[in-house]
Image (cartoon, rainbow, N blue to C red):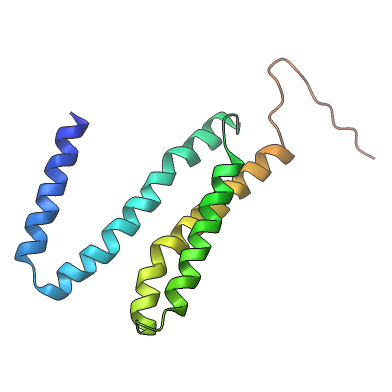
Length: 128
């Protein structure tokens, strides 16, 4: 079912890109991939917050993803072949990847610093 929906979505977007004026097509072509990148991080956010656990999370993959995205950003911004406006549009997906990983790391830090109390354990706060 999800494969059929995905194929239908791709077909609909392809049709829209052919029918819409070029400036609208350009906007969709620039914005839609970035939106899909952001949406791809939502299940990880949900898993972290729902389970209050980072079990299975790979900090190494995050490191490589952030370093690669930062490198691509620098290369695109330093490219003499494109204008600043073109470069800024081209780096948006990489900046979004970095921002999403920063959010994941912030949630991971919160989970590490304040773990959930195991069921059955009672913590008593003593007022000073």
